[in-house]
Image 1 (tube, rainbow, N blue to C red):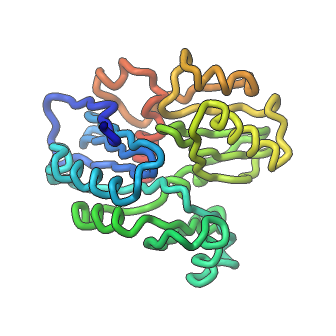
Image 2 (image 1 turned 180 degrees about the vertical axis):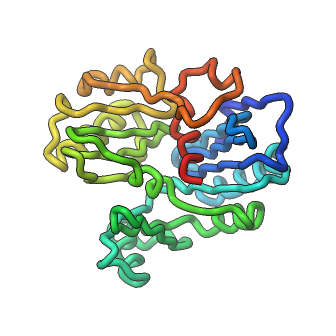
Image 3 (image 1 turned 60 degrees about the vertical axis):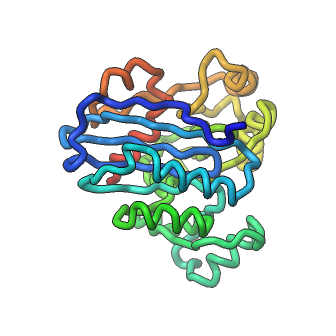
Length: 278
């Protein structure tokens, strides 16, 4: 039985890798990569999905195999970027952040059974520290294969956006996980990745975030990115509770290989938006 599956493999026939940028996102249920050429055109998207509940050692070995065998990862790029999307991530006011406190907070929220590499991103405009943990073996695998890549957590990118007034719930759907960011009346409330095992649990995670921050689901605009289709059972489960749903579009800063444009734009919109901060 396959536990890591190739879901999308879109590549333009000709790519000048030496002048292109590689963007990689790695998380508990997925491994995504895209390639942006020197003309600001996205020429490739490859997505691998990881089954939920797979032992950490097996995930590491599967990722190691992909890094060795995926042709696009054997090329030399002008620049490479890694965005981590693992669940263990906490936003902390800068004045309360230091190395010991960050480790203690991660252990308090997520437990101390999982050892890993602790990292911190500083968000200057928000005066926040995003402190997060990456499984050690996965960090070492990617550091060995992409030693010169810049590294940050996807939540650092997500909370750096400009927030409009009113209530907005920004989501990225992966295979059995959701990244959820809640903005209440123009103020950031939470940005966190949640795992789910069934459709009802996916909807519950969204409702629970709203309830925890006293936001009525009827008043919130739900922004959708990632692996969710308007005809799917997952969408139907969410639509029962959220009537104002908007599918995100492709970032206008870039152009796209035609085969990418032929698919629903929200499938990859968040992945491409990572390039706006590179």
